[in-house]
Amino acid sequence: MKPLWQRWVVENPVFRYHLLGQTRLTVARPLWQVLSVALPFVVIYFWLAYQVATNGLPALVITLEVFALWLLAPLMTHSLFAMEFEKATWDMLVLTRLTAGQIVMGKFLSRFVMLLVFASLFTPLLWLAANREFNDMASPLMVLWGLKVQWVIVSWAILVSAVTLWLSYHLRRGMVAAAASFAGQVFVLFILPIFWALFLTLLQIAGAPDPSYLRLETLGRFTWFFSWSWLPIVYNPIVAAVGLFEFRTSPNAPFLWGIWQGIVYLILAVAVLWALMASVAKATRKRLL
View (tube, one colour):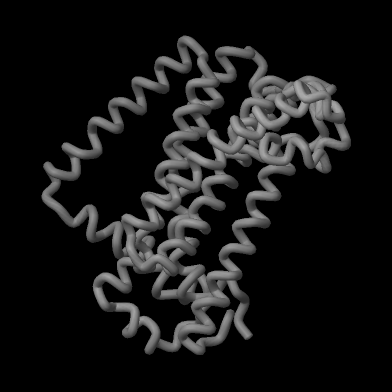
């Protein structure tokens, strides 16, 4: 039995096609067209690098990376399965000897690699901005802070990609899957925390047992993992990133703040991908792995 890495990546034609084949089709255009599209982004990137190196603004870099990765994740993933159904190529893919795991993970890992590439573009910008703002980015604590920020942002993008891939398979329409993914993000990131905070505030006004005010400082340093009344807030990736920015090198920061949220996002992503592989295996009568 070959290892999963070899079957899902090295010898997987689905992974090669979505990572390399589609990329070649995209750039197989006249050189002037490629340059006209790429050059403005290159100019903006280096202009942004100059600005953050001069003025700092790490919060701006984090905000830009959040918007970029969390918007790109569903945009890159929404059509991976829907395209097979819309172009009537799904039946041909099912007739191959590929397992359900190879089909699902080949598609997912191709987008995972792209997410890492985009995240790597923001890493030097974050380092330049933090070095200018805090003047000690070379210290181990600040390096760890930068890694935790990237961990939270990328792990949430991975979860969004996994959920969007699940939607693409079950809804079978790319635009519908993308719309559902974006709507879900808006609900989880913004609407749910606002209504939950309002609910806790109303509990206090009504004289219910004090659920504590909505301040990160009220969380126990080693007990915040199990604070069920805070669940929709502390596991919100925006709150996690803001908390990392606020605490930075503080010795009183909640234990494993940022790291634990990222682990939870990845566990959920694995669960979604496993459910998707099980669905594909059941529908096509293929082996799971």
